[in-house]
Image (tube, rainbow, N blue to C red):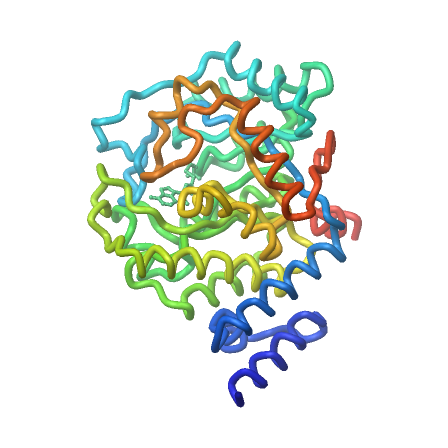
Length: 368
Ligand code: SAH
């Protein structure tokens, strides 16, 4: 009883948004003493989300345009050393078709995601693509998710007309970051890249994986503080899901662990909403992978306000398996759209049609 009362008091303080919470308080918020308190947490986050954005959800069409990658992250299915995937890059025609589809679907924005490459051929291709997408009728806003690049490249992409960039920090705790990346990938480099992204003028997004081996709620509380400290506009985070053809493929994946990852992911969305408030938060595909029926819906009900339905070519989907159990492997964009609309309706949310959906946080920080 006592714990419950204390938790609800802290939750009220967080929801009011007048106090800057410290890591200890953020960790406490991430650790509701019972299910009832956990439910209250989700409700408070949803209430704040609806206060800020109404019952609207921003949609971004996801285009996984290439799986060629120079990195070797120990968890990722498209890591360089995984010889089991067939490497592909969608043709420009295919990518433009996907972007037009997103626009016809009323999504208002696309996310171009790929493995990481920084050779001139690749960076030039992306620049050309951005320009061409901006020339389609009723062009969708462009978000990029193509890894660490130089300031020059980021600037070039902004100049070509891309608006947003997503680069997950994966974990802001050095030991944890080092445990899941090869030595030449460092947290310091990743942080520096995020700073360049912001400097280049992008609406800046980051995020973490949740439920990594050895990760605790304290680590995750520090991640939320990190998001606040670097003043991001967008967050995308989801449960870690072992991928069989990677060095982390044997990580514990018992039903209890899966359940915990899922719960923690929802709590992370809710607490991030309460702490960062007016940022865009995605309910990610990885949540849907753990609960195909209700995963993404639960993310929205825990305070997320963005969904990224796939609009890419079905033929490539099987070669973009970052993790096992990725949903909608053989669904085309149209079927994904109608399923999504149905599930939004079920939870009383609506798509925000034809809107680029800029994060309020970005609009405010650049108006200053
Ligand atoms: N190359 C780009 C983005 C591609 S991967 C970049 O470096 O930013 C996009 C995200 O998928 C990664 O940032 C990571 O957080 C997530 N991801 C990769 N493997 C995963 C796994 N096994 N489980 C859950 N998420 C994973």
